Every structure is written in structure tokens, then in C-alpha cells.
Amino acid sequence: MDTKAFKRSLQHSENYNRKGFGHQAEVATQLQSEYQSSLIQQIRDRNYTWQRGDVTIRLAQAFGFCWGVERAVAMAYETRQHFPTERIWITNEIIHNPSVNQRMQEMEVQFVPVEANQKDFSVVDQGDVVILPAFGASVQEMQILHDKGCQIVDTTCPWVSKVWNTVEKHKKGEYTSIIHGKYKHEETVATSSFAGKYLIVLNLQEAEYVSKYILNGGNREEFLAKFAKACSAGFDPDKDLEKVGIANQTTMLKGDTEKIGKIFEKTMMQKYGPTELNQHFQNFNTICDATQERQDAMLELVEDHLDLMVVIGGFNSSNTTQLQQIAFDRSIPSYHIDCVERIKAGNTIEHRQLTGELVTTEHWLPEGKIAVGITSGASTPDKVVEDIIEKIFALKTTL
Ligand code: SF4
Image 1 (cartoon, rainbow, N blue to C red):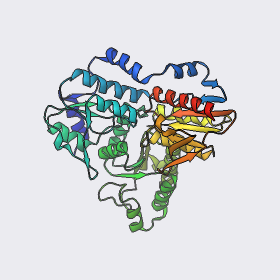
Image 2 (cartoon, rainbow, N blue to C red):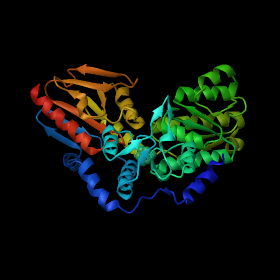
Image 3 (tube, rainbow, N blue to C red):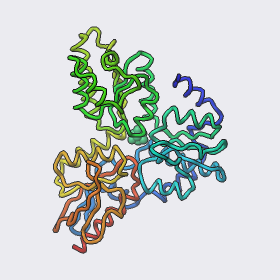
Image 4 (cartoon, rainbow, N blue to C red):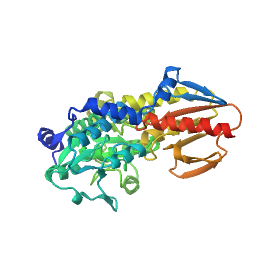
């Protein structure tokens, strides 16, 4: 499919909207009351530190809702207002946050059902309104919805669209897109749908493995088995790695994406020499500012003395997991939770480990004076952070 031409024709269609409906002022008040927090504002104003009783809270200097997420949520609220009686669907969670997604359901914005890992679009009819979430949707999904005659409200973050434009450029120049990301993540699924040839690498180890293959060749069967779910159809590692371009899932660790870019730059330089480098390697900066700011703030926060960290965000939120990884790498006891209900009575907490496992830890709040570092992923409203801080204060008075 000519994805660029399809995207262009979709954007000119009268059934497509990516700018909202002019109800910004009304929904701003609603969003403010549902998601903002006066306590968090006060902590921000007091240099991101707040002390009550034995607990000192240290907030990261950048955390929570990024502008791309705020924009997507506001557009979803506007959509409900603009289409008060139409059926409204969303192709996926608008963002990775349970409380926001719960609100969507209360507003009768329904998720397209998923059967055996496949979305069932048969429930969506002509004239229905369908919202595409902040991390986008695949070009195939857009086409299905467009063909059905749905009204499409596209809240895809412009940073994500920037990555799509990058893979389009790779495709035009016949470069294979090396995408730093998780092959199952919706954003990476969407990005790869716009790419020509692509290979998704999860981390530095996988990048090194591919680099060695480029330089020395290797076991082709092993390569294909390793990346079976993470490459374009018919991918041939012996032919399709002669020209590569770098792209990323916007929420991966910035430092890792940069290192992966460097690995491939060095590899191509070694193989083809500096004068031919540009014919074999392309790299554009597509790391989202918000992800970068939250990661930098976390790196600064963990330099302080902290007895523990609480990292708040959806369990399927990639950028939250990256923040948790930073605490883990510093050996700081760190608890990734998605809502206040994970903090149970009796000094017990239910939290997600980096492996994805949900575990329960008892006596997680130490006795005596403690410093608690707090951060939250780009999809987490301040209100959720406030509830968790208040719960920690309350719990600590009972210990
Ligand atoms: S984290 Fe970045 S790419 Fe993702 S929605 Fe926010 S601003 Fe956009």
C-alpha cells in the first residue's frame, strides 16, 4: 500500500479530524477538576519537596501528563461533546492510565473489542465515531475505518507522527528502518505499518547482535528465529541490512536509543567507510521531549538520598517502566503502582516488577523518618499522584 498517499487522502477527507472541534475552553474546566491537584501544585511551588510528619516527599521536576497526552484526552472529551448521541469507539486505551480509561467508559466511549489478539471491527458501523489514541493506530486499521465511512478523530501525538514521517523517508530511500522499541507495543505496531522493510530491536544486546551480523555474517536461521515477530514480511538479513535508518518508539530510554544509533553508525562506517556512510545510514532525532525531560528529572531525583521510590503509571505504560528501570539500576527500593488502591492496609503494597510480575510486599514503608521519591509516567494525572501521596502520609501515622 502507498501509505503516504493513503494518509494524504485520509487527511483531506471530511470524515477525518485531528484538530478538535472548538470546545477547548469547556473541556479545559472539566479536565482541570477531574485530573488536576492543588496539593501537587503546592509541592511544585515549594521546589518539589513537601514534608508532613516523618515523611518527606521529593517529586521529580518533570513528571505526569505530557502535552501529547493532555491533547489526546482533551480531544476525546471534545469528541463526546461534539457528538452527544453518536456511538463513539476508541481503537485502544486513549493513553495507558486506568483512571482516564475508566472515565472514557463512563462517557460511553467504548473500546473496540479484541478477540484472540485481533480487534473486531465488525462492531463499528458507518456513521460511528472512532477515536485513534495518542500513540496512533496502524495504517491498516485506519483504512478499515475509512472504508466503513466512520468519522475518525485522530489524537495521534505529533511526536509519534514525526517518527512515521521518518520511516516514510527511510522507505523512500530504500533504507531498512531499525526501530528501537517493543514489537508488541501499539505505537511500534503503528510505526512499523508505515515502514517498508523494518527490524525492531528491543535493546543494546539485540542491536549488537545485528551489528555483528552486518559485519561478519552469521547464522541466518538463528537470526530469523530471533526476530521472527519483529521484522517485516520476507525480511532477508543478508540483503536488507545494507542500508539502515534509525527510528524509535518515543517512550524508550533516550540514552539507549542514542547508543543504538551510534552502534549502527559505527557499524556502517566500519563496513563502508566514512565517504559512503550516508548511503548506508540515516538518523534523525525523533526522541520525544517529554520522555526525555521525565527521564532526565528521574536521573536527577535518584541522586538525592531516597529511602524508596514510588513510580506511578499504567502497568502497560512503556515510559513508566523506563522510569522504574532507572530506580532499579540504582538499587533503590522502588514500587511501580498504577493507582492508590494498590496500597493496602497493614503496610502492604501490590506492585509491578520490571519482569511484568505483580507482587505483594509487606512492610514496604520503613519506620522513622523517610524520604520518598515520587514520579509518574506521561499518562498519569496529578490527581492520582495526590491520592497516593495522601495515602502514604496517612499510612505512616499508623505505623
Ligand atoms: S510521551 Fe511524547 S510522544 Fe508520547 S504522547 Fe507524550 S509528548 Fe507524545
